[in-house]
Image (tube, rainbow, N blue to C red; front, side):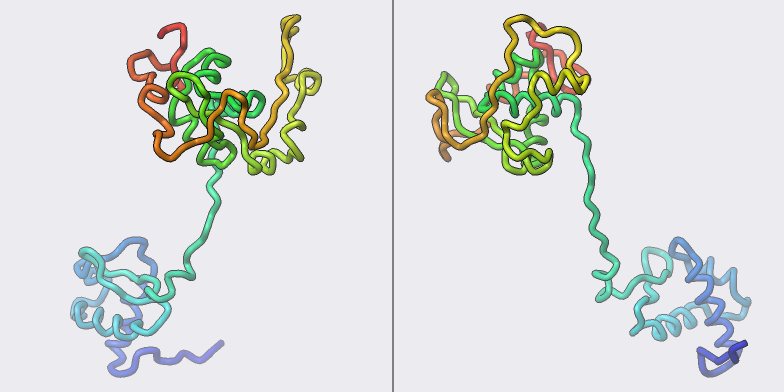
Length: 240
């Protein structure tokens, strides 16, 4: 067994008080007041003096004794705080509305918000499009050459990378969807899968984005304020 050594020089009684104080503070999950510490130490202990003494002992160590709020606690030395930092990637699940909107953009691009709503049958909330833009999977392509000049949306290379697609043409076709069980029933006889494209070339009815016009105007993105919303914050077009 290793020989015990005195960590605190001087009066043995003071050294023992410091040891007890250190142990109580180390085990505490919250800062402890001087009154609470005094209840754990011999009655004659000068708690304030021992705290200052212990604070001096730990002044140049990896942890410091600090006074916080109305109590005392051990904390990592400020200059070592970076060692305690951990970076974590937060995984956020897309809502059903966002997944449906993403699928429509991928297959029908370039597509406007109104065209997405027409396909889905419900109004698209602004937050849904914002989330897709934040993921980096969707981009603003241009403006449709119609009254109001609505923004057109398309997918990005990051979309292909995330879903392991060599090109947008590798999106599942009708037979693939039916074979995987994602398509139930028989589609109408005149149903045809769109031919997706994600190149930068603008359609004949598209204009490039400009810096002067707002990307989102109130009429384009805030139409849901006067209609009843469903569980996803979106509205049924039939109610408008």
